[in-house]
Length: 196
Figure 1 (tube, rainbow, N blue to C red):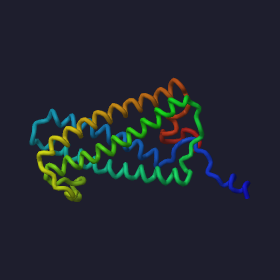
Figure 2 (tube, helix red, strand yellow; figure 1 turned 90 degrees about the horizontal axis):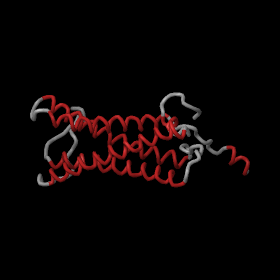
Figure 3 (tube, one colour; figure 1 turned 120 degrees about the vertical axis):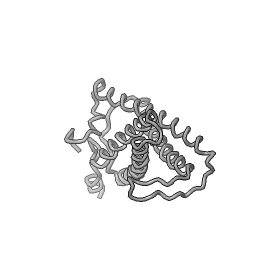
């Protein structure tokens, strides 16, 4: 009976599953686009179609990011609870491992905070906004317009914090790949980069 439970246990993975990899890189690309687009339209003349169009795409991508983050959290819970995400261990100092876990936690918190602030900012403007022009996002709060500047400032500050922490995360991944050569980055690369 004991032998059967050991043999039926989920094998340790050598890379993340396809959905986790896809959602990770989709998140990274959207965050980069969101940060860049917000700074690009600042140099464009107010009221121009290009500026309005860029803002509209920015909003729609923010909504898409919210869906992706919810999906990532649900998938993470599922894979952890079923043992599907159990990775083969890679030797590293305890402090480095703790910093890695903390960085991931901070990234998730910043992503959730940024998404929430983005919605609050748009709702405080009391203007309808749409998901790629397909359907409007209902206004579930009735904020005073005086909150618009506060939400906007917080949204901007969290964006900078997010891009800085994500940058540190990326540099750490490159350090692991090129200096430590421990295979951590390959686990998140798409394609056949090792056994699953």
